[in-house]
Image 1 (cartoon, rainbow, N blue to C red):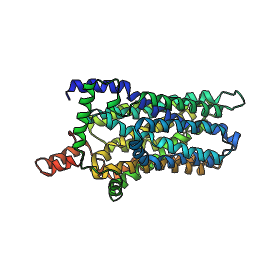
Image 2: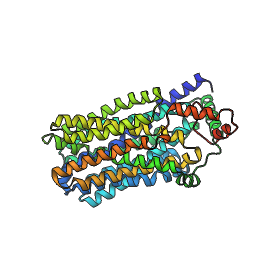
Image 3: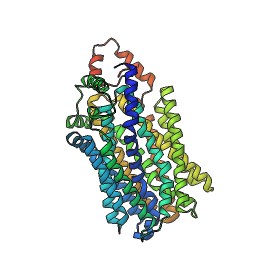
Image 4: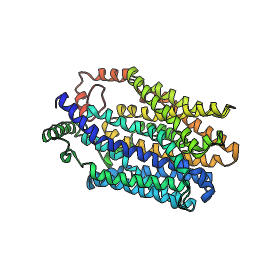
Length: 458
């Protein structure tokens, strides 16, 4: 397919399809973090303790991790449109049901179910992009997901703060928060079913010639990857691959810190500024994500420009951890809040810049199941972090300091990971050297067929 035709097709996909993917990811991140804003009023309303909140916040990621791989298998059998729209509607209904919980047990159960339904969405989008977008354009498509996460934090905070201030019809503000989020999500799920085709063949906004050209290019790429292993065999191979576990444990540490900070952020802010209203707290909680969008763009660019991965990650992880510890030591609430903004922005950027390393190091045999395993273990960190923080939080001021220190220490551990295991976080120059060593070797073509990630090759 010529570059000009490729550009035209990708433009149509960008305006007709990718916005659905982006909006779903945005809504998903807003819905999952709603409990972090509702936690404060729910303490008085249903007697929610810090420990129960930590468990409810974290149990989400257990359901999320369990469903990722099975969900994609069901997607292929049921069809993308019906399966994804069903997931969206189900997590929307579950979100709405949170408004009617009366105790911690029902809250924890619904949060687990919410994780199950949301857990299938992101893997489905990653898979669907491979069915629509040629390899040369996928980086730009995936970047929408990276942008949606901090954007959700930026807009979700003020929206949640506003909804918490509503008292109407016998419902409290935290109940209206979940009701509105649930209704919006269900409506989007219905809209998805009407607007997203199952495959390029069904896209009314592509001409027949464009469909043929796109499908031919995608088929050629699939033929080059025919020897890749998928399903159970690749997952078993991943379990035997030491680098997969090293990446998994590093992402697990990051997940404990980053996802823990995300769930506890409004309460950390309220501790520093006790007189804040719900709306003011939501606005302040959104500011760190504006910083995250800036650091993500700038450091994503410098990472590509310099070719460095190891020290970008190390700097982000260590800076995030150090900033959290600084927020404890500073006597000024303003300085502590600024440090919190730095910690959040660095942790989110760390998560975004993590993935180029495993995708460039793991061979296709390990990568097929390995990347799913790494992501699943990383999300389990999102269960452990908030739950352990909830245990630490018991005990007033000392509990607050223990919780913040815990997040800071695990983020510093994540920052040390690329230094300790430096060979698994190679720079572009090191990858080029590996490529040069393979030049002229007959094994090179076999490695390409097996899906070995070699710079400069698609």
